[in-house]
Image (cartoon, rainbow, N blue to C red; front, side, top):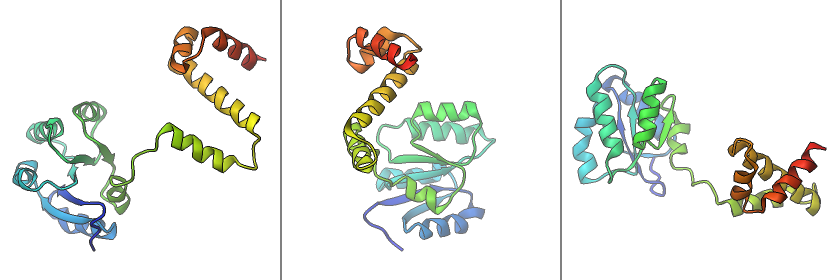
Length: 186
């Protein structure tokens, strides 16, 4: 099964799980370019014809694996990188900092499909969709109030309660933030 619209994937997984992982990719209708047992063995494929996404199974133990994965994550010219497995928190932080794009608990068709999902829409698109979904359920003034209140609360939360910083985030005068705070405390 081939889905040329979304691209191909490369997989780094233990040989014993190769058949199981290939089946999950096929169930997701994703083209598997190659499956290799180590990052080192996958490097020639990455250099010659890199796939759209590389899935790497997390392996606890050898530090060489961790170093290879971090090196791959930090490389400037690389495909999207997804780690499958459960690294501990410190490793997860290191991988995220290095630039790993996605994490999944296990190889499943949902994981293969998720990496090819369209990127999140812009704020304008999200608001437009919310407006269309609210049509007939909320009046314009009610919808504006909901948006205003949510943005106000989120800005205050992000700013740690600092009204001046919240006003800067919202691009409004700080007196407006004070007015909103008074209205919400009523």
